[in-house]
Image (tube, rainbow, N blue to C red; front, top):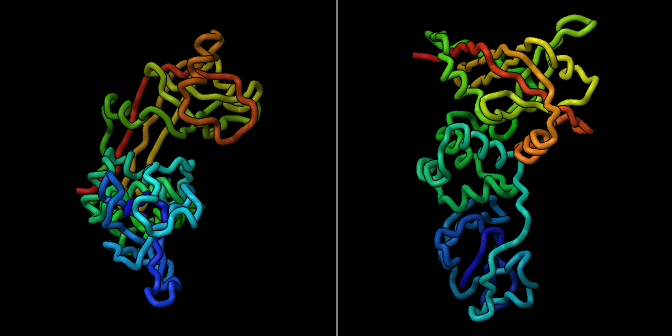
Length: 296
């Protein structure tokens, strides 16, 4: 018997052949797809590890028709799944927090007491981990189960209580560069006819410079030709901690065709605002300052 993530395990009554229990395979510890399997049961939504008996068979969802995958080992497909990955909101948040902590799946899975294959399933498929598993993941990732579920996503950050004995310290230029990272969302401050305006933009770090896309005539485009200010921050609501980095430097438009093509090809994502935004703007950091709030 062999299975893949996302397949269905069905346990039938040996007397009548009727389905007694079924569930989705969310963990396959062995690379060759052999048992045991981590199964999320449809009747309880709980995940348990199972060594299938003679009354169980695998339905290879997305591989073969049900009639081709009835229990007979020599006919079980061993091809890997080619279904496109479609992570759910929880999976995206788990993967984001894991990468932010610079942890591997194996490290997180080991600390959370689950298989690495199940964690991969959570991150890559629209899974719904039980509250115990989600709480363990949150503890390992330094956040909360509510955050991983998206609770408070529409609320402004910083509404929590201040931590006991908070410490505020300046960040060095190197620490500021580390926190700018390679890409994300930041805010650019520009002067407009209506006064100083601050707007968020998706940005990349290219050869040490901040690069973002916008449309000619849009508010962020007003940064071109000025000494611009750009800010990035992160707030850990659960721990009442956070940091902010402020960048000052001249902003210019990228006009070289090869440079524009390179920026477009290497960009991690398209602007969240959508639409045509062909103008690339570069801010060369001349002054970096930052602060961090942490606890003892």
